[in-house]
Length: 90
Image 1: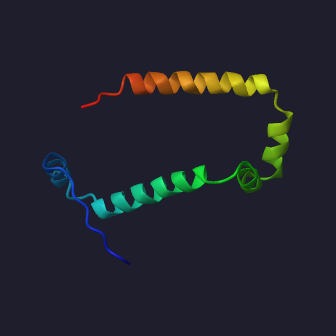
Image 2: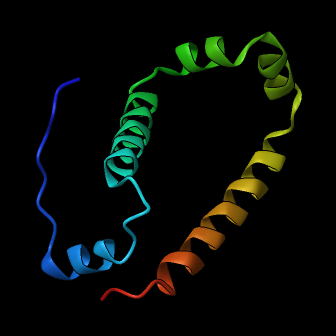
């Protein structure tokens, strides 16, 4: 398996050292894999995504009224705005 080296700020390193039971390389490996999955999912076209989700999902998607999706989108946006506006920046 190839190796990589990464740098972390001193404060973060001190906090990590308080938890020697954690395999930090595994944490980093999982974080990288999740980030790549997110990026690769964003690169999929709509047709590719629907193909991966299956025919049952496509049928449900097509039979659901647009208003239901609009309501869900508004709810999601509101929740995300609330989350971001209450997240400490430092």
